[in-house]
Image 1 (tube, rainbow, N blue to C red):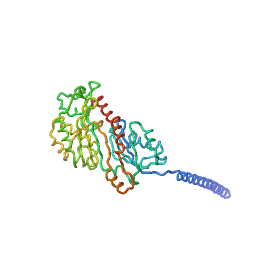
Image 2: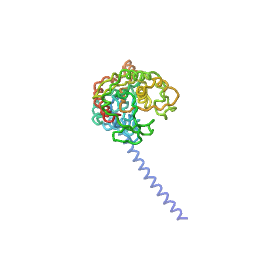
Image 3: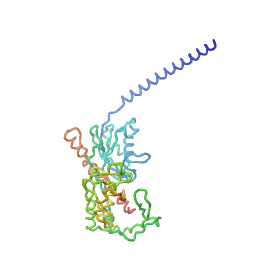
Image 4: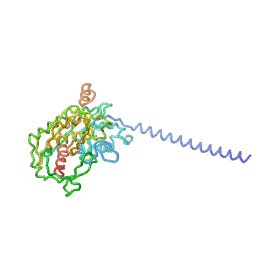
Length: 379
């Protein structure tokens, strides 16, 4: 009996000691945490919502948007902003912490003369200079403007303008002696994919470069290409102009405001044309398939009525034009700019203010790259 009582007292004594030590530890920890929280609160810097204008050559990046385990434009921008302390360490864990949004997405390999991203940053009058000093040379910031607190680059963007740079020999008459090979016969052979993304691969002999350099498009063929492109204007169901897996999962109707086809222009010994497309928004691969459809109508002398039929319910497999020639010219913020100017609450997003620098970058880092790659690879 006495032994049992003695052991019970020892257990109670030990338990009391542990509880006392644990209480002291927790009190000490609470004081430390309170001190850390207080320090975090007192050192937290004010942030401002801004719209940042950015241009880039997208050849080395897996598109604009964040993706796991790959290098994208947004990831590169976010890391640069963290590096120059425009984004605090507390908010550097994920872009959602600073409400990071883009006005327009671009696919892998696609360029932008000017895109706009919105986010909250710690204000710094040297923000642009500091960011450009740590960004790679194929990404440049043009400027930024403070926006309203609720501004979202994607939601406040009314429309987007894209450009496709195209060598006119893509419109030449169809060659009848083309042989599709299962294996390349020479290092210069070009791989073509039959159907969408994961179709069978075939190889063709590269066209003699002198034939391409000497080609000049006729007015008749250029007019047919222009007419084909103009048929995309207005509101249509572009379900045949995106990936098949997208159909049924989202609305594929889109409105194209305007399309412009330039006159031919000689650049480095070859003839090129530019196609400008202004639409409210575009679905994945839509522009590249539109360009391809118009080219094919001219290339094989098909009736343009096929384009109207492609908006119907029947499923078609339309190939994509190469990503190489596609670039985002700029997003448009017409309604937002009108609102902030009328109310006098913020400056508008004025892309034209940086037009000279944008056009120079486009010539030096986008157009020159596209033309060089075409000379090398005849894409």
